[in-house]
Image 1 (cartoon, protein in one colour):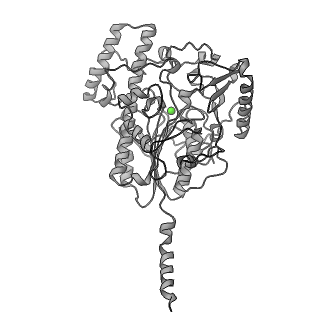
Image 2 (image 1 turned 120 degrees about the vertical axis):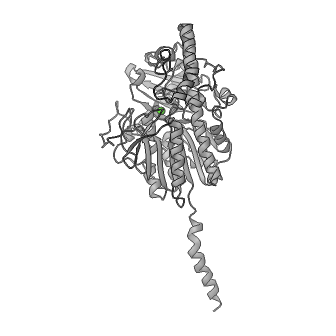
Image 3 (image 1 turned 90 degrees about the horizontal axis):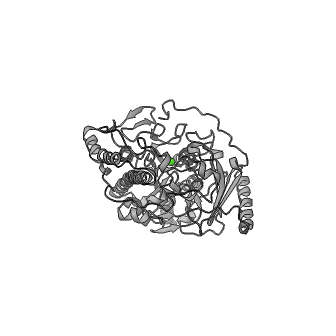
Amino acid sequence: MKSKPCLLILVLALAVAPAFAAPKPPNILFVFSDDHAIQAIGAYDTWLAPFCREHKVTPNIDRLASQGALFTRGFCGNSICSPSRATVLSGVHTHVSGVTHLGGGIREGVWTFPPALRKAGYQTALIGKWHMAHTPEGFDAFRILPGQGSYWNPAFIGSDGKRAQITGYATDVITKLSLDWLKQRDPSKPFLLMTHHKAPHRNFDPPVRYYRFLDDVTVPEPETLFDDYAGRGTAAREQKMEIGRDMTLSGDLKVLPPGKQPKSLSEADAAEWEATYGRRNDAFRAAALEGRELTRWKYQQYMKDYLRCVKAVDDSVGELLAYLDANGLADDTVVVYSSDQGFFLGEHGWFDKRWIYEESLHMPLVVRWPGTVKPGSRISKLVQNIDYAPTLAEIAGAATPDNLHGCSLVPLLRGEDPADWRKSLYYRYYDPGHSVNPHYGLRTETHTLAYFPRHDEWELYDLEKDPRELHNLAGESTQIPLFGSLKEELTHLREQFGDTRATAEPAPRRKKNPKNKSE
Ligand code: CA
């Protein structure tokens, strides 16, 4: 008889046990921008960071970093939009995802993490830039920009198949759609929200509220703005991505004929454009700049517009974080900020990306995970975009296949120091854009090795002694042992990832969403 109350307690305990045994996994807010270089984030330790901090270019991303972890050695595996996006989703390098070039679609049957999270009980949404040929999979709802999308009054393709144009500036519209989705979601389920900005991608078109931001200051110039490419390979001289030579006055720098404003602007916004860019253009025409002075002028305008776009992205981060705070969600939400690759902000005289060189290889990666990540952590282990999918899957408690190339960053986020962590990262670039030669190579904690098949040339850089990568060591006799061992390591990586072909096998074409055409 005495055991009956105990039995009753046991039965009651078992009835409520699952609620304690399986706590709701955290929400995931994944904010992803396009072409945001780490140099343009105050929290990173780069030559431009003091300027970004002084002028408050990224106060919200910096705050996120101070509350979470900043990955100081986070890289992509193929420095261009669609390939990096496919890798972020799939956890595999681009020769396996099938998205080796701009605008490709993920190969049929390749695992991606959003469907896995949905299967694990998450409510999933994607808002903003997609830029792959196939329709998003694994989302309860999506609203994507067709192709590159437009900075002003962008069209969106919805998961309902409908296409709608929304008035406003793309970054702000994407933020509003993200907040709208958060407000109507099912709060009983954890959520995955992927907010994918178009900005600060070329042609660096800022919102009207920032037309005058940085107007009266001079942006510092990188030491290599007038790089002559001596000491480098043939590829560095064959590219067409120089600010002085290749950046266009009308398309990139908004030098329109006198009295003309962009057609997309309202009457009031056009007046502000005339008062800022119009007046600037008049002064530019009167100055008749040439040579280095013209390059310097182009650099200033490029950087100011780029940083104005970045500041609007940072506003978006701030608005999303404010929503989490106001709704009691901050402690239960992992917030990730990243961008699909790095970007040259005048280093080597360049804009754009594509190279294995540091500026384009780096991806910003900030993760705030209250209760797990120690605020203000700086993680210097080598990580890559192949790691994003397994990390997010582990956070969500979702299953992953065994054949991913990346590995979960959760141990690093917990502050662990795995002794067997990778010592090198594999890189391969295929796309012919901006006349950048295809190349492949590796990066260790201290060196970058690259091979350019078209010219049968190797490049080797010591990143500790030569962080700007100006002195190719590949032909130097003192470097023969290191050069040999890194070449062996590269062969090992190519075999490990099954990428030993001279050219990539193109992915078979998939059925496209007929409305998802590039613009
Ligand atoms: Ca990009």
